[in-house]
Length: 319
Image (cartoon, rainbow, N blue to C red; front, side):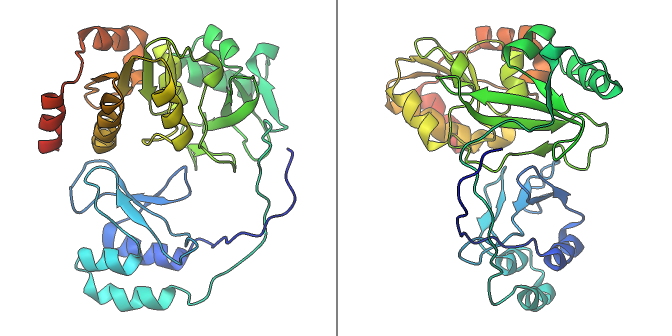
C-alpha cells in the first residue's frame, strides 16, 4: 500500500474497562465494523443491537453513543448511564475516563491500493479457501458474472485473511474504496474497513447519471439489485455523493434502506424532493435487497409509487 508522510493526529485507545462497565448495565456488546460496540437499546427495545457506542475517545475527549432506531444519542458514557438511571455506575465511569489524551502517530492512507494478499476470482484460484469463499458468495446470490464485473476477490493471508474483497472505482477507474467481508461461518469480525474516508461515490464507475438511481446500504445489496445502484456503505449519504446526486440529471431515485434507518431515509427523501427529484421510498419489511434477490427487488420497484409531500409528512408523524 502507498502512504502519505506521517501526519500527527489524535488517536485514543479503546477503553476496555469502560466497555466492561457498560456491559454490566446493558449486557454484552458486539464489536461493529466501525470499531464501536453495539447493544440492545433500552429506550426503544428494538430486537437487534442498534445502540452503538464509541469507546475510542474523539478529539474532544467524548465517547459518542447513538441508537440507529430511536435516534437517542449523547456525547459521554456518564450521560448514557444517567439516562439509563444507572446512577451507581456514573462515578465509577468517571474514574475510568482518562483526564489526559493518549496520543500516538500513525499514517493516514490517502492513496489506496488493494491488499497485497488479494486474489481476484477472475484468476480462477483452486485452493480450499477459494472454494469456501465461492460457496459463501453463491449462498448470497452472487454470480460469476458479478464477480468479474466488480473485480471481486479474496485474501487467504494477512490483515484481511479469509475475507471477500469488493473494490470500488471512481469514474476514471481509480480505486476509491474496498469492502472486506469475512466468509467464515462465525467470524470474529464480519467487516473490516480500509483506513480511508468514505466520503466518496461507491461503484461510481458503473453509474449512469442519466438513469433512475437506487440507493442501498451495502455493496452486496447493490450487486443483488443489478441495476444503477450505489451502496452508501452505511445508513447516511456522504457529502460528495449528495452533491453529485443533486447536481446530476437523475430524475428518479429509489431509496432502499433498512427500517432502522427510516429517519435518515426520510431526511434524504425531503432533500431530493426539494431539488425536484421523484423519490420512491421502498418498504423493505426488514429484508435487505441481497435477501430479496433481483426478482424480489424488481417486483418491489414495480409496485412502488412516488412519495408525495403528504406521504412524507405522514411518515414523519408516525416515526
